[in-house]
Length: 266
Length: 266
DNA sequence: ATATACTGTTTATATTATAAACACTTTTAG
DNA sequence: CTAAAAGTGTTTATAATATAAACAGTATAT
Image (cartoon, rainbow over all chains, first blue to last red):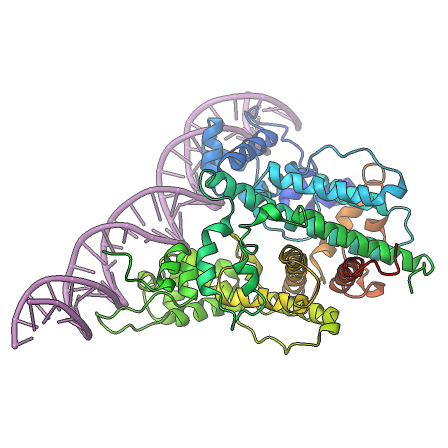
């Protein structure tokens, strides 16, 4: 029972949530006993398959096990709890190929690529945003994404706090856009033959409920049909994602300019 | 059974989710039958009380009803489903006093006020961000918040699409910050005598797992203790919220300047 | 050779949200 | 004034859920 004969990794594993430790491959497979008929990867990929098809709510231990030809309880020989399974699913969804690095002066394009790439995860796995975030990323693939976001900042004159703040800004934006995009995809898929976006169903209702006295600034936007997404065709701004992203990049650029010794701007 | 003898509001109610219709007060109280011993407001405020204390997971129909001295099923005489109750809770949390309007030239301060105000909702009701967003806001108090966000844009030379894009940017940022702040508050409260932030518990583990070969850009930040929030004291950036917010406001300002007829910048 | 550690299964439990039927109460239509 | 109608809160019941505990069988280490 001595704690001394542990590798640093094994010690690290004890400090992490079980799901994260599994993700890092820090849980050694058992030596004795019957051969295992499943594997963690198999379970996780089946769970993802179910979630991709029927949503995260459809992912129950029973459903996964049945799909694999086993009983629900057998899964607990591999994964300590469902929460840990969710962590593993999340990390697996982050296992994507990263694009090749760009030269430093293309940092804006690099950041666009990062945001778009993150949004793509939400589109590929609509359930991704349904898994609650419990804290900072600590699983291997998730951290690779963070590393990706940091790449274009490498040679910029920023300290670690500034870099993390920018990553936080971009990743948060990517997450918001990802969930928005997912909502739209869902609505399109659900009522493909009827309405285009969740808001449109409510468009008529909002027009009667939103009064100019109580909602002076919202009122005209509801009336124009822009609020509910009804009038998306004539959108002057292009993709919703695009507009905000360019504003943020402009803001970052301005910060860099100021920091690099007061550019031409006052 | 004619549909013609309905007020426009009653017709609107039929197009909204039940929770939203209740929020708008579009469900008329019954005329016959015994006097009601509860009310929607009573149920919602008790649910919020429970959620504030023990988190959203603790809010069960049973718990609410018991706290009020009734049985779980009695709640269904007031609210059609738990999902509707969640919508009502969300809207109730948005029922906050708005600050007085500022003159147009103080638009940056107005937007700061809006973001800070939204974050305050997450701090006051840590469960607020746990309620999933199903689409655009359609409940009365929630829409008042949207109206608030639109205020400083009123007299700007922007069309409705541009305005909504900016609101989306700011509200998304506020939500991200709100959830971050909530995470920190939770961690502080949970391990107040031990660690300060969720990340710190994992700090040591990450130091052994994050290798420079696989995470070249993340590695130094993990090692410096900035990634896990360990070294928050010397933060050069101030509040995490602040930094990103100022970048976004700068980006918006630049857009306005460009739009207003090409300022001094190229 | 045998103890040990592990396998997948069966059985059981505590929580959920909520449907259905019940006896009772108030209002409304005749 | 009297039924019918509509609504009250309750009891009972149901289907899902995650997961704990005990089981018989199997592979490995000593």
